[in-house]
Image (cartoon, rainbow, N blue to C red; front, top):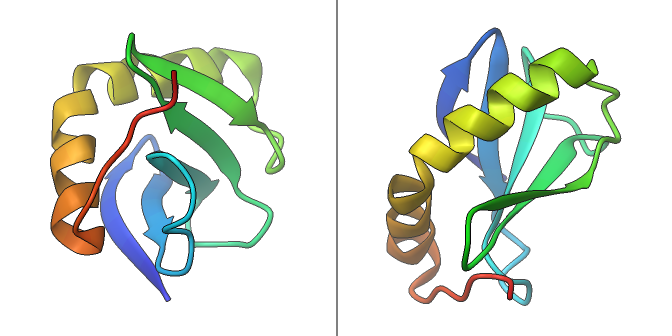
Length: 90
């Protein structure tokens, strides 16, 4: 079951509850959660696009990346709150 965190530009941002063996990351998809979501790693220096499975246009990827970067600390805190640990990707 995904944990929805926020919405921006019609996209939803969420964690899947069963992905605790990976570094901190967030999934993004238009309107609702999907297994083919775009994925961003939260890294030690910012945010990195892992994949664009939901085929978000480049312009919106840039806007989402900026939004995630500005909310990076909040995302990390929410991950730790939900999963009880947190490690960013190097």
